[in-house]
Amino acid sequence: MLELQELCFSVETPDGSLEILNNISLTIPDHRLVVFTGPNGGGKTTLAKAIMGLVEPTSGRILFNGQDITPMSITERARLGISYGFQQPPRFKGIRVKDLLGIASTKKLLSKKDACAYLTRVGLCANDYLDREVDASLSGGEVKRIEIASILARQPELMILDEPEAGIDLWSFARLTETFEEIHRKQETTMIIISHQERIISLADEVLVIDHGAILHRGSPAEVLPAIVQGTLGACPMIGEEERK
Ligand SMILES: Nc1ncnc2c1ncn2[C@@H]1O[C@H](COP(=O)(O)OP(=O)(O)OP(=O)(O)O)[C@@H](O)[C@H]1O
Ligand SMILES: [Mg+2]
Image (cartoon, rainbow, N blue to C red; front, side, top):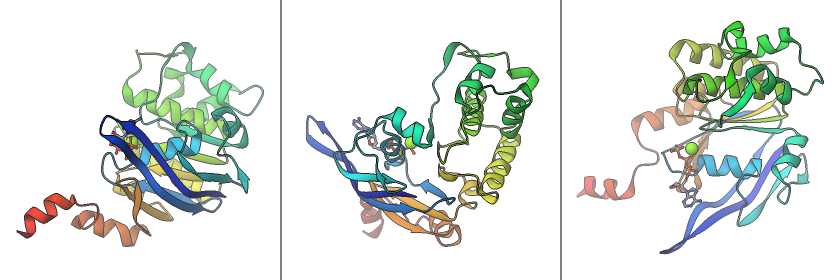
């Protein structure tokens, strides 16, 4: 179980302190699929990074399975079973896809068959990719899917994926959503997926709309999706004011 208690993150700017996460409290029980959505710049990535330990909260606590992980490093959190897939994944020159999957895997030696299976689950033809380097020669969509495959190979207890759909073609996207659905159905892991995609939002047990660093709204996809489509959530207050005049 993941618990966020009054999480805040602010940065100092020339104009003073800027609040990026504003008192976020949240509990995610095991094996849930929770989607964070909301307008660009709302704070979704910052919140995900705070859970992974890539961003140090200004105040508040993060508990994982009852243990306070707030002071822990990224490595320590990874050892406890938390994995994070970046919105823009890094590339690793000199490391081949099969090496990356092998490093990520919890198994001592990842077999070729298993490595292929992980790539297939993200819609990649394994034979074409196993020996490729994870460098700039891969397209954005390819590197994104390879990173997701490496997270699947890790078999984490908590998987955080930041916009897994970004840059991915429709065919691979369909395969990827099937994979998320399957993981969820088999209760393999707890999933936090940051997404703007209706198809992914509709898979969630709970959807959180994050705006201005706070949870603006939360509910089931059936409750939240119509409100998003009708534009009644997260509207710019200044535009709203203009429209009322
Ligand atoms: N270190 C920082 N210094 C200044 N501003 C920051 C910093 N980190 C994040 N921000 C700002 O905080 C806000 C939230 O950023 P974040 O990346 O979390 O948004 P997001 O919800 O993931 O947006 P998107 O949907 O575009 O990915 C943005 O306005 C961003 O510019
Ligand atoms: Mg983001």
